[in-house]
Length: 341
Ligand code: F6P
Image (tube, rainbow, N blue to C red):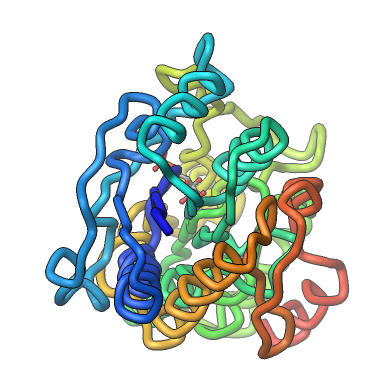
């Protein structure tokens, strides 16, 4: 069998572990040939690839990022993109393509699959918002990095009797905010799923100081927004592709909290540090299992499917189902966090 693998969309710790696993299972156990497209779908569209053998994937298990590179290029956004992809798959004699990616990548994968290409998807995102899998690799690492940062920020916040508003990633969902906030014992967690009321948030932080505490930590997901009319709020505009920019909420929140509480407040944006560096053991294991199962699905001819974690088992789910909706933080999960913060 000849397999093409690619990593697309925002990178995430564990991508190299999947690539390594695909190569080990395919090359060593099945005698397959594996090629890796460079910079995501762009590599497939431009026929830019490299051969992946055991040597190519040596020593990458614990390495962050992706040895194949990534981009946000999507075949459907380019005129003739789908046909070009189909042509290259035929020219290269590929029997299977394994795209590893998040929401946007999986939508593209689903589209190409509907167009008849032999696709087995692998979900990834630090945001953990893909509905068809219980967990995506990268999430555990991001939460671990954010939690460590919050632990550190507590000590400096206390020294200066400050409010620190810490912005974590999460454009549409607040999983990283929820988990890191719970793990670090933050004093308020603000998520995109629940527009926040500025009066309520101010009262919550204010009560802490009134009770004699010397500092407060507020964790806010980058996509969080205030309830309509609750505070003046400016969006951060758009990027060069016209997509909404998300950083900025921590800045505005800290200014507003400082003004309302008369306490020093500072924003801290953790940003891409949450995506960089070595994956945790949990993420390495999940990524390795996904890679193994993707190769097995390809050998069974189970195309148009996605690897997914359900409980402790890896199963295959239809790609079309995987991209239907995002997994958001439900009210009861938020309530669990609220009662301990
Ligand atoms: O989807 C993963 C993610 O890390 C989001 O949490 C974040 O909003 C986004 O990617 C950032 O993307 P970029 O690296 O393109 O700025």
